[in-house]
Image (cartoon, rainbow, N blue to C red; front, side, top):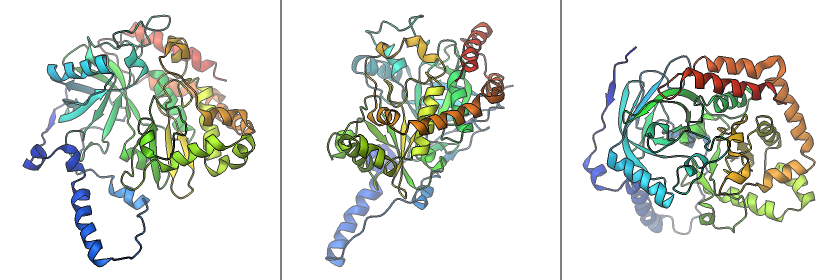
Length: 445
């Protein structure tokens, strides 16, 4: 059924046309700090100034964007068919493609995007991901049995993995409360049932996961592709996970999780800070890494509980093992999120990027097919320590939840019913992909 398009046009003021975006974002802080410093010099004298602590109340203030686009239907409602069309100028697309192929840069460019009939203009898009994009480099030779782990190609932009930012070029714009979306890599086969199923199983186990949905995705009128869309970690996501007052960090693919000194600048290429910017920085992570580098085996076992939530970490490790996700925090992509609780002053490890779970990693033949190494000292030492008993207990509990009464298969069957076909996902490909994932799920242990 055709849906009526709702067009959202955002008029830009002189202020936005003239002043660079980064300065606009911090204008209040810049001018406010200038006048505050002058006032402090005259009034406060030698009084002691205590720092402001980031609290849940501060987080609530960031929830509602100045301009929140409601749309026609909930994007993450799996009971509804969804369509996303994106339009990017040939020039901007060429810039994005050239910057990545020549320099490995993931450049933001403007685009118009229509989500379930609602047009949003001047959003930011960029290439997203690592393993999939490496196949697109000029020197790539392909991986695995089929030569490629996905059908991504610059010849059809509908197949490319994208990050979508609604406020990259416009201040405080969100779609249904979200500032960013991740359009996941299009795996060979095209259903991405493996990643969606793992996200659902993780959520069903009480762990932090991400909302997801399938869409029929098309860029610039090219043949459509069945794509999985998930919420990208942003300030709203940091609030929605409901872990209290804290700071969320996202690991980058280059992260080696090593202590590099006390300067936060040394870690900017290893972690992205998602929220609480301006009130907190990477200091908690630096302190953890410093402790980890100095702790011998006995100190590690005696003090780890002071740094990390043991129960959730055991569930995380067991989850990655059961769901066969080799590209987790210790994998070549170093994919994970870290939540630092400001009250307990402990870390929680959160799953992120499960597109190689449930056998999908077999397409690339293991770690050797990547151009960068894996490993994570925190996870590896945790698995070798006496905390192995915690991991074993978590494993038994998760297997009981997912495997007993064929719960994982039942969940998969429900999800399969809502996956849309597209120009590039035929019924034959669909059935082949589902059968392959089903065989993997049947042997979870």
